[in-house]
Image (cartoon, rainbow, N blue to C red; front, top):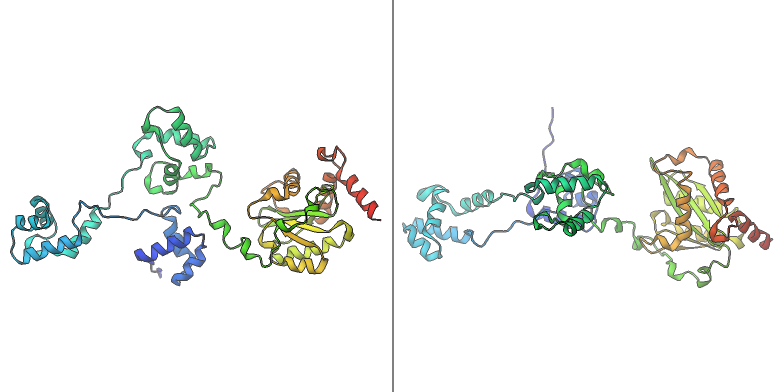
Length: 385
């Protein structure tokens, strides 16, 4: 059987690796820097649960390499231990122990002794949750009750009078993700809201598909003021809702009437989404489709094709600002009654989606003084006729 040779990285390579990971680069992008596969980088990142290990430093109390070289020179010159210690301003016992543990007077080598000392010094301190079993049990219990680490940390500080029961949320996260600490079981990660098996960079979600990656994007700040008050019909909001196995449906909501349209999609590729939206726009008179406000997602990369084909301007929301298309967000929540999360959305035909949209459009809405979206939209259609 042929075994694959394991890849080892230098300290400098690992530092670069962690720098790029914390900047939000993907594992594949990082691997290309070293001519490796992403699984090679995954092994290094997963060792500490996506948390960068602290850089090791040498204590000022320890002998340095230059001091060990002075010891080596002194031994070659047959100086006494006390003489070497006096020149280095160290205790004679420190010099004596250094020589004894690294080969004695005849075999002492400075570089070898320094490497051995660095290896022996690697004795990680036991974490707080491992030293305090009662605190560890309390944290585990609250995690199982779906409390976040920050809530646990704040609650302990407020309710406990003993500082030994104070623990930061960062310590809880590190103990969960770095299993070598041995205080909290790995299964408790499933109690976190994200349920991630390793920590991600806070920049990761903003890289790759962010604002700067959509060429010639027209920001929502450029949307006409007349759209804001919802008095004029024909301005729509849209987004995708996701199901299991990478299945998607496009949702469209008219801002004036809250009228809903659903569009079946085979995938979320920009060509697929844009083509489906163009086809859907042809079913409405131009007076009732003047603009579209969409989330800033990768499916909008080809937004200019939609505008050229339909003469409808697309305005993109600011990153991570779903409230800027509030009608669409609210409608998506209502749709989950019919299209629950985690279900395969490809099982629904376009006819079924039209039926679901009809049910929503025929439900009276408080925001419309209990008029239905269908009635309000039909009035708009009649006015255009």
